[in-house]
Structure formats: structure tokens, C-alpha cells
Image (cartoon, rainbow, N blue to C red; front, top):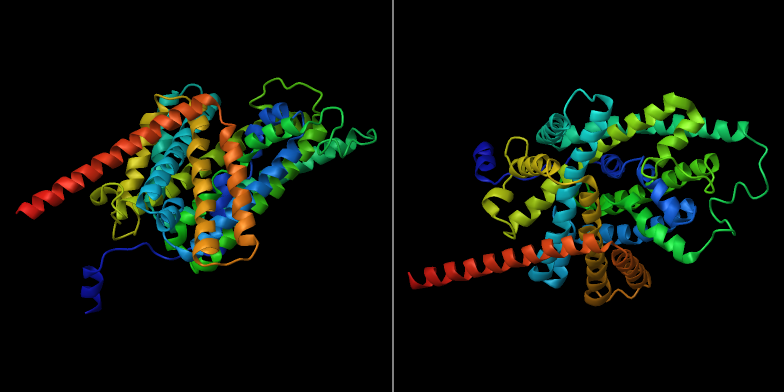
Length: 447
């Protein structure tokens, strides 16, 4: 009887993720090494105030993380920002939000494939970069096909490995700083405030770039239907992930600035942090950080493919995307298998035709629109509908909305144009589906 009932009921996602699993997932998706690739650019734009920019960005992202956690309490389902905006503002607004955040989720595994392929080709130049693209796209896909528990176990090992490397790097940097002393007065505070170069405009420009350090924390909410006690744990995991990431990032960039003062030029802006590590720990640490960034990006690729598959499932289940393909759960492992394959194929094909830079620039377009939507949905639900007049239910999401809007305004024009093209395609697709649905209704009525 029970077996028959189980067979008759549709498959659903399995609740198995604890608070620790969610936090580890978020940290691995964001990467404990997140500020390292951005260090040179933030140092340039912020006139050397990388620590200040990272901390300001952390405050901004914590505001939005709180909104994500609060909305996950009300709507503990797999659709994340798409679900929250749909519930509060209707299907049209939800569809637009889901479509633009879909760009972010789809691009993240793709650019991870591109970056990993390039890095691996540098280590083994005899192997074609296209072969590496196939390898990493298959790796991300096969891990996620094993089920969410396997992804959680992989995240634990990756977090431990990355944590050990970062700890050794920090030890080498602190040792270098102590060995090169004594230092001038104000040496320890210059990374926070250097009166010779400080400018609020420059710091805020650096902050808009430094916010990329935290991109990915929102993917925790896509696991609501697979987490234990999501009403509590999604909020706690989202905020904890941002806080842990921010504190660790601030420490990493602080010691890096002490090792390599802002007055000195970097040999290469994009890989500035690797040269800082090399100064502190020699060639061994130089190559170790290179390899660590590769491993970290593998973890990010696996994690973001997991989140993207859940977002597609949420949209497919609501028929915003074709339900027969995207809204299906594979009954044995209880995963959206079609979506995992779809994203793997997209990551592979995209990695062969677009550049890493273009993909990275497009990420923020969808991400910050979704962040604004979640903050607005929080205000609508708690402050307007529920009439909860506590200051935090208006001030925090409003501040989060404004900061995200400011960051979005600072995107490069190329990213805005490409993002608007994607949005236009989404609107056309939405109109097509609505027209097709209306035609089907008329046909049924005539019959």
C-alpha cells in the first residue's frame, strides 16, 4: 500500500541539508579565495583602499542577505528571487526577475568552465584548452548528477582544502611582514585609510567592484526544499555565509596590502594577488595560489550549476519555462536531471565561443536586478502586507535596494546593452507563451 502510494505520488526534492551544509555550500560557491582575482582592479579603482571597499561591500550584501533569509522563511521553495517577487508582485514581475537572474545562474558555470580550462591549459599546455573545456563541463555535470548529498560532501572537502591553503598563505604573509619591519608610523592603518590617496568617489567605485566578492550567496535560497528547517536555516546560513566571507576577505586583502603597498605597481593587474603571494612565500606559494584558484573555481562551477538547476526547476514547475522538460524531478536521486544536463551543455558550448571577460561582465546585470527585487519583495510582504512597522523591516531592505541600484548603475555600458538584449529576448518569449496559451484556450473552448 505504501509502495503503491509512493509510486503514485510525484517525486520531490529530498530534505537532507543541515545548516553546516548550507554554509559550506555558500562559502564554496563564493570561494574563500573570492577577493584574490579582483584585488588588482579594486586596488586601482579604490586608490589602494581594498579593505575599506571589501568591508563596505560586506555591509551592503548583508542587507540583501537578510532580505533573502526573511523571504525564505515565508516561501521555502526552490525558486529563490523568482519565487519571492512572483508571490509579492505577480507573475509578470516574477517572470522578469527569474529571466534576468537566470542569466546570472547560467553564466556562472559557463565562466567557471572557461577559467578552469585556461588555468589547466597553463599547467598542461600539451592538452588543448577545448579538451579541458569538455573535461570540466563533464566534471561539473557528473558531480551534480550524483545528487545533492554528493555535492554537499564535495563542498566539505573543497572548503577544508581551500581553508588550509589560505591559512598557510596568511602565515607566510604575516611572517614576511614581521621580517621586513620595523615599519613607519601608520603602516598598519594605511590599508583602511591613506590620507594621501583617499577619495570617497574612488572608494565607492572600488566597492562596486568589490561586491563581486559576495556574488553567489543568494544561491543558498535555491536549496530551501532540500534543507532541514528552512524557515530558520536559510536566513542563518545566508547571513553567516556573507559574514564569514567578508571577514575572511578583509583579512586576506589587509595582509596583502601590507606585503605590497598601494604605491607599488603590479606586474599584471588581473593576477596581482598571485604576485603578492610570490613575494611573501616564494615560487612555491606563487604556484600553490595559482593551483588553489583553479580548485576554488572548480568548486564554484559545481555549486553554481547546482543552484542553476534548482532555479530552472522552480520556473519550470510554475510553467514559466516548458514544464515537461524543466519542471521534472528524476525519481531515483530526486534531482532535476534534465536541467543539470542542459546547463552542462550550455557551459560547454558557451566556453568555446565567448570570452571570460564578457561572461563575467554580464553576471552582475541579472544579479543586482534580482537583489533589488528581493529587497522590494521584503518591504511589500512585511511592511506593507503584514503591517510590521519594526524599523528593520523597512530600513534594511530599503538600504539594500538603494545600494544594489547604485552598484547596477556603475556597470559598464557593454554589460548593460548585452543584459538588455537578454531581457528583451525574455519578454518576447513571455509574450509568445502567453499568446500560445490564449490560442490553446480558444481552441479548447471551440471544441
